[in-house]
Image 1 (cartoon, rainbow, N blue to C red):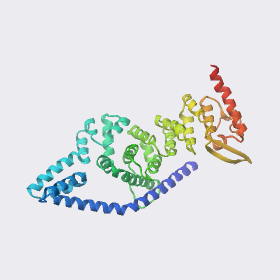
Image 2 (tube, one colour):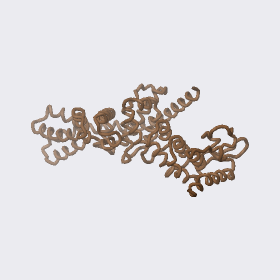
Image 3 (spheres, rainbow, N blue to C red):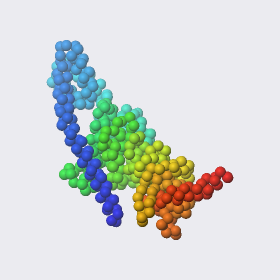
Image 4 (cartoon, helix red, strand yellow):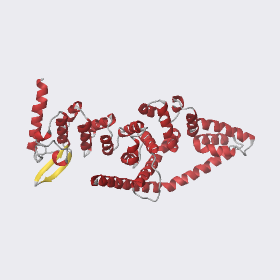
Length: 395
């Protein structure tokens, strides 16, 4: 119970620090964003006024600008159509027709009225979603919920992709803050955590074509530890949430520690794929510890050749003095212990954990994943080769 409380407190602290960092970044940009919104509204009104210009070129430029403004121009245009001249109303009607055909909100309303693959295919990220979650009616309903949860993000993805990276960073910070509030970090803003909003972030941010700014990636990965999300994984839509999580943890160039920790708690083929990929391409620092722990818990004999290929990796996991004896553990050492375990052996019999009681099975702990001397390490390698590799050759 004490250990669990400490773990939860650590999670809350990590979420708090991330939230404060993200909030600071958002505050720096809030003023500029507000001014930009005001300028945009003024520009739209100016372009609408120019629709009545006597000059053909001015009217054409205004029409083109309003088309590029997208959804933001729809409401002002509808208001202007109530009072404009007949000629202006005709122009506005033509612009509105084209805008609404390309409008995220319009397409979403059609999808809700006619839930089908045909209509879903007109929406952003559908093909990636369908690849993960399928194309059945249940999947379409779930996808529609995600669109409704984060319409601003999906609209940007569809019509203004250049703006999406900033919006993703800000929204990820907001969702992280809501999780922090629920976890006990009171910022005075009681916003409710939305699992569907988080799933929408996972879907959008897992697209390698979308550039992630600064705190976006750590915010999204930190939310993997959110209790509401963990609870949702056991609910009716759990498999869909888990599928979208898989897309995120396999995204290129994100830190793998938290995704691997999540995959240990919620085993999937995606988690195994991430662990294997980490050993093949990103075995540095503490990455190896998380990947190797996942493999010893979920891997099989098929993973042994990969483990053997990193026996020589000297990335340091543990280094220091233990009972006045120098002790060091490398990624390669831990890989050997995992390989022995997957082969059905006991690492204690290979010289690991010299001070462990001999009647116990091996524990994967800091004090048992390495060796006190290079001679001990080499002896373990020789014994492994003799028992397993030479035996395989003779067969």
